[in-house]
Length: 426
Ligand code: UD1
Image (cartoon, rainbow, N blue to C red):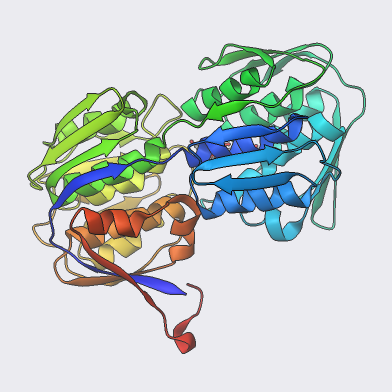
């Protein structure tokens, strides 16, 4: 078990190569279950959630092999339709095997998914919308069982644009007789990426990037070669870190168009940002001003996954920045930890008011979720003196090479082993 030691105060300068998007590669890996010949996926991050998805594929009878950032998946031998508890409980995206296995096997059995503890994370929208299309569900001894009874097509309405429910519907309906139109679908770029992969494998899906998606079922999907889009939240992470610390960084192999709200806030805070093609360059003096109120919202709004990151960046900014979280009910788990560093944050329901302070001091911090972990590291980099960050298992689920990348940018950061008697809930 490890913790990170950070000595704050360094400016960040240099180049970072952004990896493929965690939230794209996970649904695409589930989609590989639908393909009866091998798939080759480029630009796949080597992170814990991807390792869990590969373990699930192997447990179902698929073959999976990594060569650098390329994954080769052969689902021709898929023979099981049950995702075991020890794997399903490790991440939220295990729920996507529900749609994938329903499509491929006509039935699925899954233990309930894990993931970040961001409050209630029900799967009612997944279950209700698949039920509308003829799936029948039962829940026994912690296992959700699903099977098609009378398959029907037609229109499905999502009352809120759930990313996971949209992905499950795309997966479940790609192989069928008939046409399903999904209204109120989520419009995240990672959904467009999943549709891009499914189309490359022979699916007939229209309306990617809009709230209305039409899926004309096909009989079979073949293998496909596909490149996963860049991770916009990893991109936001380095931008917020460099903005808060001050510095001059260039991010390669990313896409600034997917991050307009975050880039807009960082510019407003005083950063100079140039986004051209697949590169974003940011210059910051580290002396930021507060940003206009930020309200998280489904894409193309301000991403909930970047809320903690931007908050950490503006802890020393002049003035008051207000953050309203509308997507998840418990997405301020980082706030009490940031307060340990001397941050002036007042939390009231869904709103956090951050008044910039002149100085932050080092403290011992414990991460409770993935993006919160990156926010605590950002704050540690801003603080004077030494900070410790525990709870790194969350970080490993979503970031490849973060520590080394920060070292390369000039940060004083290192991971050290936690002595065995102190390894408790880290
Ligand atoms: C995905 C992302 C996560 C991101 C989130 C919102 C992945 C692996 N994770 O999570 O990083 O923060 O989108 O952009 O892609 N909800 C229901 N019932 C449901 C499903 C969702 O009430 O059946 C609610 C959730 O509790 C939440 C909101 O809808 O409040 C959005 O959830 P959703 O879009 O489904 O997020 P995830 O797919 O879990």
